[in-house]
Image 1: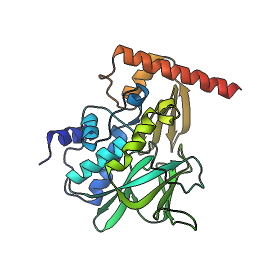
Image 2 (image 1 turned 120 degrees about the vertical axis):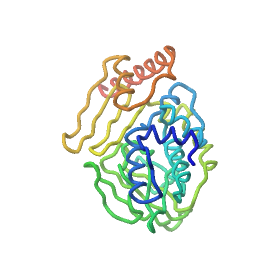
Image 3 (image 1 turned 60 degrees about the vertical axis):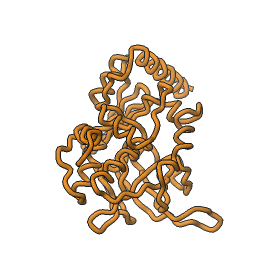
Image 4 (image 1 turned 30 degrees about the horizontal axis):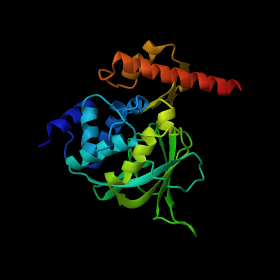
Length: 285
C-alpha cells in the first residue's frame, strides 16, 4: 500500500501503475522523473533552501516543486525503495575538469539492483542520461547526447575507495565521479548546507533550471533559455522580462509557482537581472 505522499508523487510523474520492480519499470520511472520534475534552485536563490530529508523532498515533488541533486535523487531513492527496488546511495562529485579524479561529496547518485543486473540511476544532473545506464564500462548515446562510464580505481598516493566516472562531453559539466561505497542521507547534510548558503557556491550565485526529455534538454541559466535538441540542434534566446521568465518556469519546466509571492517573484527577478548584467559585462570585457 503506497501512502498518500507517494501517491501524489507518482501522479506528478504521470505514473498510474508502477508495477512490480523490474528493468522496464525502473527505466520508465527515471524518464518520468526527468520529464516532470525539473532540476531547480529557486528556493536557494530566495534564501530558504529546503532540507534534504527524502520524505520532505517527496512531499515537495507531490506539491509541484523541484530541487537539486540531494532532493531529486534523495526523493527518487525513497520512492524506488517504497516500490520494492534495491537502491544504494553513493557520494559523488561534479568536476569542471574532464581529467579530474576528485569525489568532493557535492553530488548524490544512485545504483539500483534489479533483475540480476546493476544500473546507474540519476535524476539530479539536469542534462544527464534520460535512462539508467548499465553499471559497466562503455559509451552510450541518448537523445543525441553522449555519455561514457569508466571504472575509477585509486592511483598511487590517492585515498578513497574505487568507484566510477561519468564522462559527459555534451553536458554542462564534463565529468562526475562517484564511489562504490554506500552512503546515507546524513553524509550529505554538511555539504548541502554549504552549497545552499555559501556566497561562493554556484547554486547561490547562479539561477538555473534543467529538464531532460527523449530528444534533448531545456536549460535556463539566468535569462538565457537554451534548447539542446538531437534533431534540430542547439537554440538559444534571451528572456525579455519577469513575466516571460515565470511563464517559462511554469510551461517549459513544469514547476508550480503558487508558493511564490509577489515579493518572491520580485526578489528572484532582481537577482536574475543583476547576474545577467554582470554576465554581459564579462562577455564584453
